[in-house]
Amino acid sequence: MSAYVYFELGPTDGLRSRFLDDAAEFEHWARELAAEFPGEYPPAKLAKLADISQRGAAALKTTDPGEAQLIDHLTHDYWNFCTMTSIHGDKDVTPSTHQWHRYATELSQVLPTATDEMCEYYRRLFAGNTLAECNGHAYRSIDGVFRWSWLLPHEVEDFCGKLQDYDNFLHLEDDGMAGVSWILAGLQSAREEGSSLLISVA
Image (cartoon, rainbow, N blue to C red; front, side):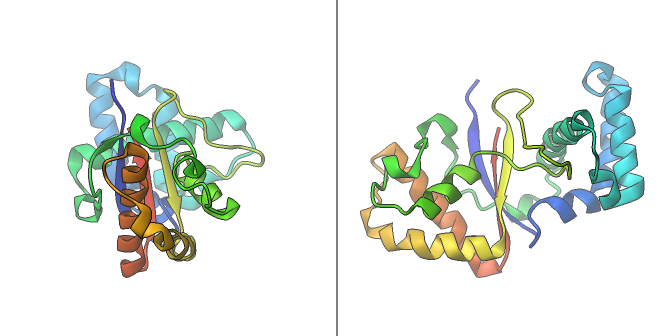
């Protein structure tokens, strides 16, 4: 199954406040699915989602790496919730639905003179962010594919300003360059709105 890359405009804190604001509705949706597919929503996952729904941001803080991983799993479920309900469909700014494997692994493969900072921004867009606040924890994909990453508004401004200097060198005939051009388009949309840029691979 091919994975695709999607772009959205997000709140100024990335995905965090949106996830928390939607937690109650997300929980209701998940419990309905759990009744039909209990194997997909074991009690521990539903209990953690209920905890987040009730306690909000405090429930994202943990010292348990296993609980942090559970929050990452819930992020994947939340993406499914958003996709199936179209609750934030108006925030979609995907310039073109492009398969993940067609994006360059490193920005320097497409733009050899890109700075280290630009290359790091590019890597972050495909690394996946975690909502869990757990010392030493980094996002790990549940299936090796899905990930949801974001750049905050000041990072969008910085990366967009640096990347658009290369705009004239980008063309759609090359997959890697096309991918960078679509990232630039997403950054420009986010900058115009003063928002974060969310990128998901699914």
